[in-house]
Amino acid sequence: MDSSQRLFNRERTLHQILGAGQVADLILWRRKNQTVMILLVTLAAFVVFERSGYTLLSLVSSVLLLLVVILFLWAKSAAILNRPAPPLPQLHLSDEMTNEIAAFIQTRVNNLFSVSHDIALGKDSRLFLKVAAYLWLISVVGGFTDFLTLAYTSLFILLTLPALYERYEDYIDRFVLKCYNKLCQLYRKIGEEYIIRVQYWILEKQKLS
Image (cartoon, rainbow, N blue to C red; front, top):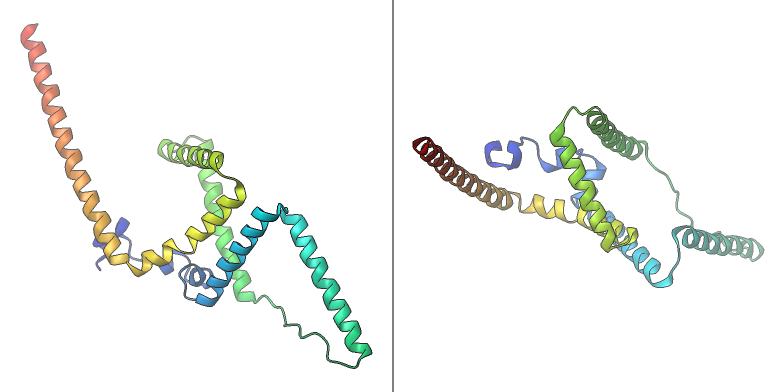
């Protein structure tokens, strides 16, 4: 599809916009197993927090305590009985993934600082109105739900909507652009009718005066 037929006339793909790295692969289901695992783990954590009444700190501490005790007793009994030690995987965070995550966070934080700076100095009124609207919307949504539910819902949306959009990108872009063009035509039509009425009203006032 031509860039003029895409939303915002963009030339880059969604994968490139998201950074074209491992984070983008996770969001767009290029690493399907890892994405599914993240969704399942967060869903399990969400259910545990909602049903058990645990806080994040107490749950993490309890799980780590149980894991450490099991592994310690397993290793001690294995040494006494001359058995193999627990099969622990080699946990390692690659430099590539660390750099990509750091670059992703750095870009977003710098954008946030830039926006905050422009708003604080009153440079962009439209940007101020947008940020105020978003914050108001978050405040309204936060009044209907708790942080945990909002966080899981946001993660679920992040890991599903971009992938669905990429899969049906052509259809969605055509539909949205078609609706946008119709709204523009309606706006111009209403604007022309309004201008004609205002001009007619001015002429009537001039005749009466």
